[in-house]
Image (cartoon, rainbow, N blue to C red; front, side, top):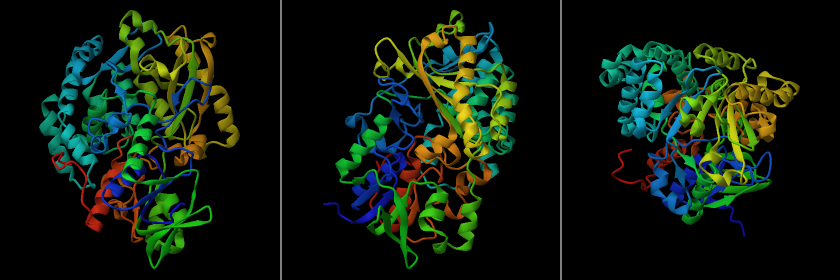
Length: 535
């Protein structure tokens, strides 16, 4: 019989919700997770959306935080089936002429990276490699910042760190006030390298022309670059392992059940209503849903102050991190013409296709951010079956790609339907320019998921996988807004644990981990974290 009273209830079994639930249960709180879908993981999902046997990660692709994610070690996720591989060639870009590709390799293979960039500029090659080497040394600091409640830092402090670490490479303290684009342009002279770094900057959370995020590129994006693992079996194996950890701890999970409302009595969250049933929470409710859904829809304005209503309504979704996911069932993996110069491009984990140069990427991003369908159907692509044969039938390959597109609300339903009908064909034409075997004869089937569909499928509002745009007023101690930046809300016993909270999107589980830290402080719970980790 389903029990109806718990110490804690977590809304949503995305990876952040699963993380929080596991820590709560281990700390001694009976915990229920209520999930609207038939399986856990949220954006960490692998499906067969086009043809049986071809497996595609419909959102999250590469795992850059596994070496620092506390839950992996604290709950022994590798013992529960989590398996990864780290490809040697990590990120590359190809061009539709005879120019060489640029390929960024794993941190232990930086000399290969140097050789690749040096085909264009020895100066850029030396600077990139040294910046990457120093950024790698920041791993402990990056992890400490991710897995802690956000702390305000002055521009002087941030600038001092940058100049102290990278000053002799041309990075001065005032870089913290610059945009990522300005930083990239000042540090690197090669348009081809700039193009790859532009794309990477946008993809990893630093909008190109957002002033004040230059320091984020130098530290966080440079640390993240080419630091990626692939989940064998698809990214949903992470969700499966996290779910098993929850079950092992004693968490109850209720699937196929949408929460209708958060019950508030006397200014305190006391449970949830779901499908006509009340589930009571003796101590707390935590929401993995986005900010507006949690406060304006599930709690409701009647239980909020005017100030919190205003803050919630003003929270912005997109235009950064608004994605379309394209899935391709192929007979053969792309065979790039550039492999004649560097064969590693044919086994590159993440390959950017469809751009001529940095100016092309900039126009593309400006179009998407401005609510326009980009003129170029360019994409970042993965062929995960190169490393994991289980992701495609024998003798075939599964490819996935990301487009940056306008927010879901920018186009009508008919316009999005037209994008789904035509945009993949435009990508294939670009792909064919750099990989001659990428013709319709090589394609078994394909399908494009647009932002409006991602909004409905994974509740990524506007198609924004961070459930909240990245800008100075919505990052760090300002995420989602200053009064809610510590995961607590004005409703006693109600906490935020999803990517609308700090630090935002990405498969790091930091939103759930840090929400537990806030809850542990409030309820004087023991911390199950490894004592000597330092964060």
